[in-house]
Image (cartoon, rainbow, N blue to C red):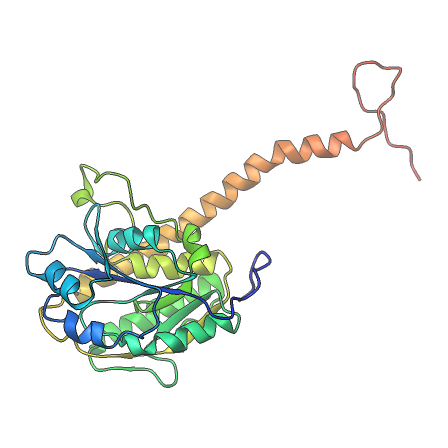
Length: 289
């Protein structure tokens, strides 16, 4: 994909912030923390109001970890809170349930250092795989990936995977709100607070024209606990996200064109010859060449 603006020079040895949402993951943290690369800049654990020992276990295992309480509810809000406080050159977003391998992070970072803006994990790229995905979810993912590819000219092979690594400077493009209070309706969530956040991120990255590199990744089964995934419900949420974001992008483009029209007209008028004797600022006709 082509970047819409000039990118800064690549950082030779970038610092990496790991942003890890966690809701009742106390039993999984020892394994996940044990797989983290040794040279991280920081580990940020965003607690989703856990009722188990998630915070205590995190502090015991990693006294240096930054513990952040999310401001609303949902995975999207947790990520927004983590992105907001991260200070590394690069942000790696990874789940705390053991499904993704933190040991793969250096491969993602290498893709960024090589020139990508966003390194997107893929279970279906050559070298990737999954021990957890069902046939129904796989078919749905393929269909949704094809739809986004058609709408945005991308070549995504895996739209719904949440293991992604990107330059922190691109956080504003994602448009995630970490600080607004919970709304009274919609279950106390803003748009993007739920599991639709992964699709939303991938669509907004495509809409912004960032350079995306897909990195093969293997998805493991959740170690402990019960997954909150629901194929039919999540599928409808993904479809709604794709359609809503497409309409949102069109409306933004229309507003930009409308707002630019008066300025463009004024700029054109200012370039026309003006008859000083008129004294009224009226533009004379442009002589034929």
